[in-house]
Length: 368
Image (cartoon, rainbow, N blue to C red; front, top):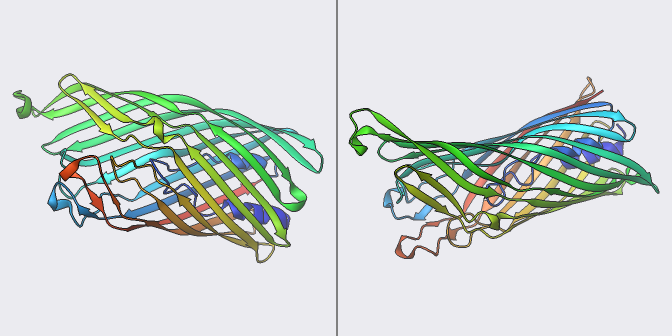
């Protein structure tokens, strides 16, 4: 790997820019592996996120001074095969969407915990054509999402839902390896769910002489489409600047509707579309070590129905080549979460103070 490839790699290493972005944003499929040199490439990593933002006001006063957020983990894996000089394909895995909440006391609605994960398994190919001093890439592929939702409700009730949907991604990119320049535009389609599951209630609550009674349940909702634009370029020997702008169609998620044989509920979101912007610089210290620093702003998606607000993340990442031909990658980040208020529930509006999230990432890459 030459020095230009090294600083391009470190620009992608470290903390993912959307590891704590608006809405339910978590990971991004590692399709950038398609641009890597080599016949077979593998990259894997895991990101840990620990948010903490405490209630300053809540309908249940026992929750004041507590944080609803749990630590969560975002895995990422990618493998690329170069089939011909101009065609490469990659398989990817990550968790693009998710949420982890646990309450020290019941919410006004009676929730004790809420968890959902979406696993994405994708396949994407890139066709490369030489144009001028560089290369044009055309990307296209499909993915499968698996949706898993759990809610624990005060009194011993539990709701579980599972669903699956498919989507696609397309993109175009242009790079000039000589100056470590690359720009790309990628689109990822949205998905919709009619997730099936079970609402489990204590038998005494419904007058049944058994510990629990299960009722069929169904959840309906949509997850967003997104468009991402990336650009990077060498600016001096051993130096590279990079940036990303992403639009995510969070306004598609108005509610999560859950219906069962005995109940009907709706989580109100009414989010606005999300914008996430990242800018950073990477530097090569030697032929084997490079590092970067970046700043990410996310405008937040709340419109007063919940507490999903603006965030700022400062992150540093690094890369070190080993004697086996691989690269150890990692990074840490600090996220500032300004205080926020609900506005749609009158006297029942909740509020949170300023909070922080801490992010850590470690990964490994190798090629043959």
